[in-house]
Image (tube, rainbow, N blue to C red; front, side, top):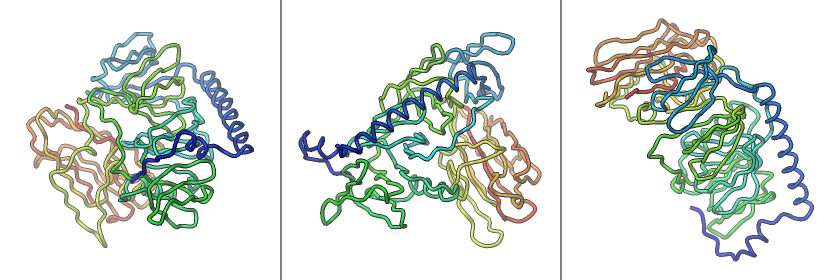
Amino acid sequence: MRVNSAMSAAQRCQRNAFPGSLAWCWLAIACWLAMACEVCSQDSQAIYPEPDFTATRVDGREISGRVVGLSLEKMTLVDDANHRLELPLRSLVKLVRNHRPPLQALEASHVLLPEGDRLMRVVVGSTTNTSIDVQCYSALGKLQLPLDCVLGLMLMPPSDTVAFDRLWDQLLTDPRSTEVVWLSNGDRVTGSFLGMDDRFIKLQLAGGAVQLDRSGAIAIGFDPALVDYPIQQTDFLEFSFVDGSRLGVVEAALERGQVTAQTRFGQSIQFPFADVIRIDVITPVVTYLSEREPAGVQYVPYVGPTRPFRRNRTVDGRTFQLAGQTYDRGLGTQSRTLLAYRVEPGDQRFQALVGVDERAGPLGSVVFRVLTDSTTRFSTPPMTARDAPRAVDVDLSGARLLILITEFGERGDVRDLADWVEARIIR
């Protein structure tokens, strides 16, 4: 757990203050970041002044055009024929940018927030036992986050993608009842978080308070039981950015290429719409299966042990990757897996994108099947990572059970990383 500090305001200032030379260093970094963000924003707007998006509707239809207006009630698009289209928010699933600016690799820290939100490529500044200051490389600029909204910090992310995904997964899912600091030498230190500056991470251990050299720490995982991310009772939007960040917002308006919004944790932000690559519409009309409990699960081994299905990760704990695109939501399975879900009153359709994850390589081979009750409604031939993903859209009228099956393909269960991307119920 986190320990409430009894220090005076003066003591807090003294604790968080940097030594003189380091203060100048931090100021220089902040100034450089501000200039870099301004240049990147200007470049982004110059190259991509009016980005085109494809809007996916709940009925499965797609509409492409330029977004000229957005709010928590509707989206306004102008198509290629210059027709102005007013789309009610609850008629939409998502908007995806058609041509994305390239993602520049930068050595920086990352902040993990609940429910898939995140801030990527940031400088983590002073952190107390109540808040954390971050400076984003993107146009989001400087933010102050409530510490009880943070699941973890990746201070020095591994350059290897497998190690990166493994550490990310540990920060999200590893059980812990206090804070954990991952060190570069492979050790872990557990204790109650007291704060952090540019030199030290401060923990309360059983024997008293200690200071860990920050340069030797690669990540901090916070006690999930103390994380309190505001639950939204109304419709909201999730913005995904070119730098990999994602934030849910409860208010949003677009004017002259700038979005003004309020985050789920209550902070006002502003950013150029040119930095947005995707908008997910979160309403009661769309329910993702990763948020529902299956009524039944069955695994059939081929050779060796089976691996359980994963929510919002591949079966081996990584992000979904199909046809060069990454996805946040879905179900990760391995052959042979059967997942059964009760069809609830109001459920109308099941939709998903299915395929073998790119990381499976040439050996993975999977057959996807969808049943309602005992009737097959969708089936694929054996698919490999070379095959284009296939869209699923199944009517649930009159059904009691929705059954998703990952069958053995042509080589048993070898590298069968089967992705049910954005598996959702339309209500």
